[in-house]
Image 1: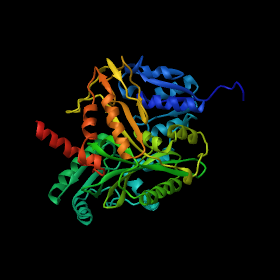
Image 2: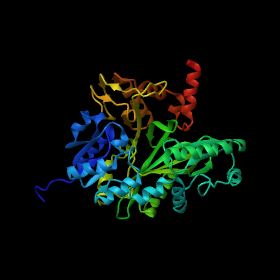
Image 3: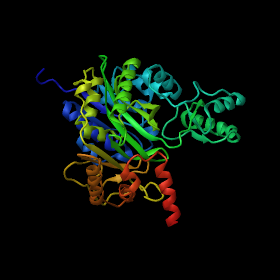
Image 4: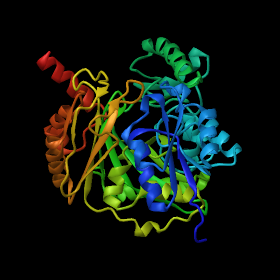
Length: 456
């Protein structure tokens, strides 16, 4: 109706992703309200929102992870929806449940689906049932019986990897190359699982020696439609943290990608998934192996947006509100190639965080260049949160042009006042093996070790 006030969406996050969500709200005609901690008071990205509410002190546990503060903020501003972004509470089933109990809409899947896909063992069972290929491994959490664990490892074949059932972010994982290492690794991994995730359950999989990390982006609505929106290669990572992502994954037959993408979309329909999500796979010797599903928007979603021309965040909000997907699978098009570099405020050699005041900030531009950042000159980079300050994303007609534009963009990027990893990105974009494509998930760790050996 004319004159009717727009629906309000509360953003339970900060920084770059909060600003990205505000922009999607503008497109959808929604009122966007940001939340912020005392450490983020006065931050430039808050000015883009229609309103901003302080939810507590700097410590994330007392602000961005505080259920009560976030729900109180939603009530105070009259929000009907909450978007958790990525990180923080974005995959927290208890928070999803609390939002629903408050009569609000979470921009994400249901708590039940989060719990299934957040438990790696349950997720693997669901994917096997849906026909998605998985890494060979234990069918359930490992028993206490060490003899039984040893037999499972022998059946799988060494090397194996132990993983926390409730894990993520590279924690609670340990490679075991021979039986003599198994007992100690089992004990330590269980302790880590309990400490990091509050769940001592661990499971075992075959450890793949030379895999790539390839993802399938999906979105599903509440009307039974599900699409896969393309693939990404995220193999260039350190300690399971991604640095550079690209779409599409180079050197993999499109027919094979289409087959696995269709299975992912079908599995969304099978489990009743609503929202955006990402199926993560290891890819080795021409085969895909499911490892986990992220039930949220991902940091690297812009490369998929660049090659498809879709606003994935706006689509995510729309389907959460009950909207139907606006296109069919045969209407999803992938054109050209896109590369994203995560720019972190950290020492490029030691990776130690580099909080502080940004005294100079110049972002690159030109054809095919996009920069997603919440930082301006005068921004204070707090020590309390993740060190990512922005993403440089480029698009080209093909991979060669995208890499050329990425090199030019990184050469133009200027950040002063804090250290950044931009110099590392410049080195990697000129690396011959990366330029050729198809590097494995272990490549960067080995590359950094070799660089350290050469330079000391």
